[in-house]
Length: 205
Image (cartoon, rainbow, N blue to C red):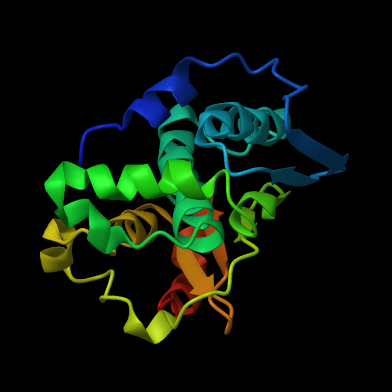
């Protein structure tokens, strides 16, 4: 399956300094190989946040640049989705109207409105030499996960909704959601570990 070109956000990720430890508007807590980040609905913070995660991953030599690029693209989609669709409750259906202008207009409007502006995204990372787990949680009402288009169906790549989830499933080894629909858990394994755990990956939905 063809992979879409890198988004502007991911391009920024690749060129961002790994020494970025203090991010304005971001609370970071590090404990061993665990890292928790809490941030506002400001998508401009996402590249710096992902670079901070990369710094922690590189400390234990978990993956090479190519593997991290896949992780970074999945993280970008998951975090931005948590902001826009979760916390700000903006429907991706608005992307189909007037070149997406109503979609981005509503995002900017709700960033200044309560309760939307008061919500945050929490990012948890647990990593060891076998796998990296990322848990992204928003403070929105959640959604019915069974209403989402099948992310494994390539025909859904052309649809405005579900495209990000398709990319996430393409790059991560296991993807699950909580019952409320406001949390996504993504697992990436080192290449040598995937074959022995293929049965577990088959359970991904």
